[in-house]
Image (cartoon, rainbow, N blue to C red; front, top):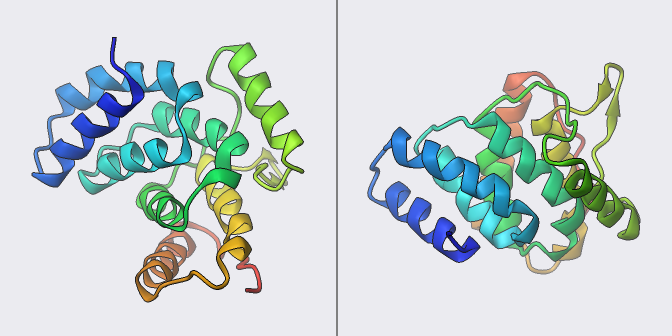
Amino acid sequence: RFRVKDLALVLNAYAKVDLRSTAVFSSLSERCREQAQHMDCHAISVIANAHARLLIADEPLFKTFAWRLRSCARTCTLQALSNLIHAYSKFDFPSSLEPVAAPAAAAAATAGATSTGGKAAAVATSGGMASVTDGVFDAALAELPRFEGAMTAQSLCVMVHAAARVAQHRRQPELPAI
């Protein structure tokens, strides 16, 4: 059984050396989904970024992470938010942000989002729930005001580039006033 830290380290190592082994990523995807409820924002951002760096679009995994982020976005660092926005912007996951995990895990994620004031909750769209990409993007952007004084040129450039990429996919995200 892999620990969260092990999963993040292995997948990040493959991404750092540009070794696109879909067999490894595919086999560890299930483990990541099983461990998602135990992951913090940093681990999710590292794993999502590894997939994005190698252009491995694993929608079920990214959807599971989107649900987890609803309850842990308030704990994200600026670097983790920047990585998440960048990773999710590489893929256009248009499917709705509906639970993919076991009902208990989905309920826990929803309860966590509610207990944080709903700041990280996905926004509703005319077709129902927000898409996976939009839900994560909106949750991450809702957290940016926390980092008003800590914003670096690098994180700002990464996030602006990601916003442009999302806009190219299908919409312009509404950026919060900082």
